[in-house]
Length: 499
Image (cartoon, rainbow, N blue to C red):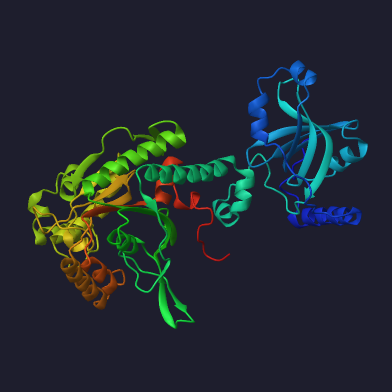
């Protein structure tokens, strides 16, 4: 018989029955022993022996020691089959009254789906050629007091998956694979940058002045110093201090915190990669990012092509490059230069579309507002949007050919921003003026405007080499590579409202 709890059975009754079994186990000795050392993993055993024939396994016994969670149990009188799941995957086990004996076989019959056991045994192949462990000794290691979801329906409540990620990982193989791929992607990124002689560093997560991005920070208080501190919104200004100090190529894979809304693309706590290189421009950063994403795709997935929400993306193809106005005109031909370069016509179009905007914004800021609300969602293929207005780029270097724009890009894939980068502003007087402008906006009520960071200006006054830098949203990148529609699917423990 297949032992799975019928959905109509009362969960509290199931828990009480399992607690009774636990009490009986305690009477016989330690119910949660810690003296079983595993030697083998399920997937490794199957990979090594799946091509062996039955006779060779019988003639050359392979002794194994595995442990994991019981995911399936079939009891057939004097014999039983079970499925054991460990960190690598699943393997079948087989018990009879002869091996491991009537007492241990009876104990297995009374175990529950979800219990954690360890077994010693010998490999063999069933009539269907499935690699199986013939159990010689069985040890109970941990009792599962709560029932797992019914096997044919699994864990389907999306919010429950996020709240009880441990349960999601137990029963959903796709969830486990997503987070394994996330880990491999971060490792591939790290190895890629290290091979290019970038130095990995760590910068403060609690900062006296939040900087490096336009965002509302979380605020805390340090009792011993009696001072206000902010959880970092970006590591940028600290990383560039290191460039000043002579670490000419640095990167950090960091946690950032922004006190903003939650959506399918936003979580208050998220992971970023930021990296900086002296004696380079934003052209270098665009080139490195293109190489990096191709490297990650080929390393983690074994191909340059991925499928996201039914559409293919090829990271080997050249990325399109457009300015903000070129992108708007390409996807909205009705918005010509007569609208985009005329402030009154531009504000009229924003009003017509019901798009809120800041009346104090110049033409560049209004163009960006129109782009973000009408065009960015249409950029599915990897696309670099170039030359952002200086008024919305307080840390980027101005273009020598046009001081109203900066040498800045954003990378869009599948309709969302994946990366942001620019040639760095290393002129301390220009940076001080832009900080002052941001401070005026903050005084006027803009909670996301930057603070004036006097120490950062002092660092620039010692001289920073020409440089470029970029930031990549790791969570959004993992969404792409794992075909996940929501950022919550790629964060192990996303923030949720209290239960």
